[in-house]
Length: 591
Image 1: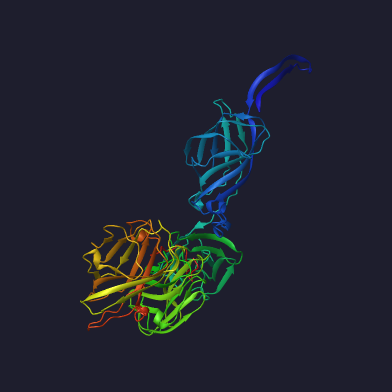
Image 2: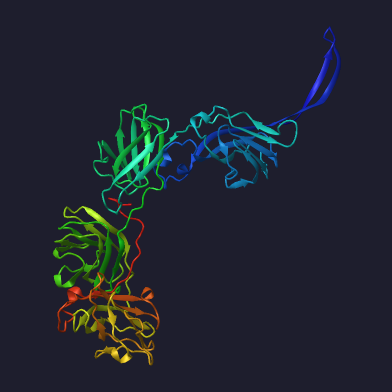
């Protein structure tokens, strides 16, 4: 490129030189620019680990993408305005970049208008260097907007002719039809076999095969489709459900019923060639509904015996012979002895089985929608399990899962305070009558000074203490070191807070706390008492170091005598720690 010069000569009829003008100034020759290697990359194609399936699919009409080219100039181009023209595409003002290795040449976008982008070069393109040009685009909206016209890039400096330009480049980008896909489901608990309706509009395409792709971790049932399923193809972690059709050429809408769908992708193919005609997905999918109000609580210390309290609310009805299953860390031990289990609201247990990772109870009655709880005696391991995860599953008599709360994170286990064997005894269980409650627990090793600042005793809903003075709270032979004055706070009817002297250690041994209560007319479903150990003189159960739950007792309508802690062991309360649900879960479901 650059200025051109001419030599001009004239000759007579005999061919003799008559006149000559040398080095006459001509027009400017534009710098040559070679643009090649066109590639159109979708968002999915740029992130194959995140989109293992869609990264292998063609761009959709009307979708966002990045167009990439290589660019080489025959002479240096510095600080020039350039215009990119891409017939049929919409060019974006963001995402423009010219790079060479790790070096970026500055550019400033001046304007965009449909298929044209104008920008200014803020540096120099060196001659002979291969640069990478990237520009963000939106593909043509429809097949009618796709054109054979070439892309062009022109550099200008205000002169009559371009400073640099290129021959048109044919991109040969190909696109497929975007499908409109929606899915619906009546209910979607985790780890269950769901029947979901998928509907789609296939635009102008008429595929002879459809490919349904589930997200990583989800599993199709063997039959795949609920109506006339053919083949399930399993490729690594990707689940594919392939269905071939003799397609009605006049139809572009359809509905399928399928199992185990969540953010499902649908691909339309020509079965004889495997050519992709279109694809789409319902990006919103549906939420996997964890069983509500699911929480799990125990004295979270190493090497202790503690009630493990489990609470849940189900919306499902499960007939007689149903099962309640608790999945647990393999290093925690649970007991199937009837005296170690207390049920609240649940039908009677007819069978119990336990192994290293599962505790399973079989019930003899119907489980109606509602709230339930149970406690089971547990022995914690010597350290926090590496896989410290619990799950609560409700199964019918055929062992099919009907509801579940999956992947509940367990608390880290403390080495201090090491509180073990919390239990409850009362002098009377008669409804509406006064009684005396005794909470017992063992401290397995001395708790150092400056560790525990207070205890919080929490009664179940409907229960009230009858404490009106500090003297109403009595301790056993081994007493806790209480604060010198105003140690007991009793203004809340279902809670007592006892401030301790933090300058003293708490010796190892067995402790009891006895105080008057009023037995309510009815007990709550979550009939769990607790003692929380706090690191300060004032705190709430939410900030406690450790909470020891204990199962409550059955309220009687006739007068009763004293009930010992051992007699109540199968209904004594346990410490409760509400745990957040982890979002990732099964959907026969390993989602």
